[in-house]
Length: 210
Image: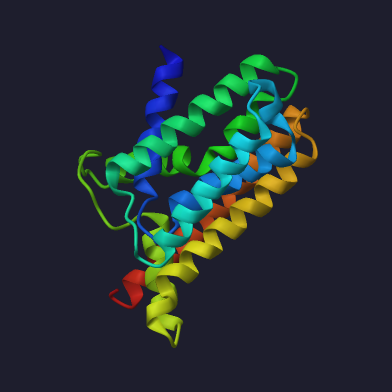
């Protein structure tokens, strides 16, 4: 069904963005805190204590991941993508008053990263199933590593930039979760910014043979 297809896109996309310390955990942690802010977990009848435990666990794992003490691996990225996708679907089923595009906004990065990767490889006549190092976060990492004095901080700094950007977008999305046009506008802005920065980073990489 279409729902299963969408789940596969998010799950696979979550693995695609798992290339920097803390990026995947930080991304879904941001979604978790936005859902807390909006009290949307109330629809699931989850106790506050359970939410505290879950929040503590994901923050703890994030810190371990940042300091190279924990690696998600494929299974960890897949699991996070699946769990949060199912959570968002269930929340929307129980409270369908807000725009479904708000859910898309929250999951936009893994979804678009997956779609863009397929299109990009297709245009370059490369099999979409073959891995490469031309994902957005990888290009950003190379750019920051090239220009940052403390090279060892490039990985975490790149991750924090992406997480912070998405947290800002999620916050603006949370201002009016019922307005579909507003949510579509934010998604469109995200895609435009993504493509513009990606092109700049890609050309920079080619120019400097990174």
